[in-house]
Length: 98
Image (cartoon, rainbow, N blue to C red):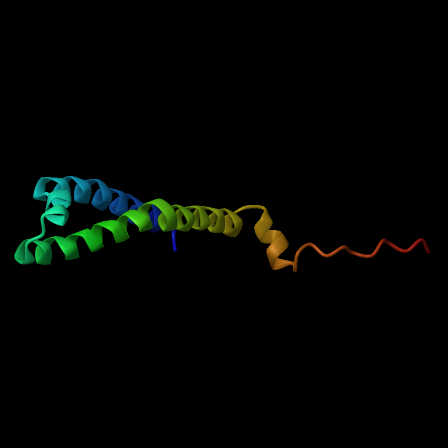
């Protein structure tokens, strides 16, 4: 995954997190859970599941994906690329003295 794509995914999940919190608050999620009615909970439950899944992803999974993509891009482009291509920089034998 490219760093740009991973960062975009992280930003999207953060926006869903913030927007979902505001939406569920305006819809009265807590009040709906405290005084349940069947029709209202049928609407709120899927929204709450999507919100909490996005929140977990935004705070725990996406940062690791973004960091991994950045480190992977750095290793792919940086000076370590030569070491990876030559087999880890194996030591060459010393020159002979003859």
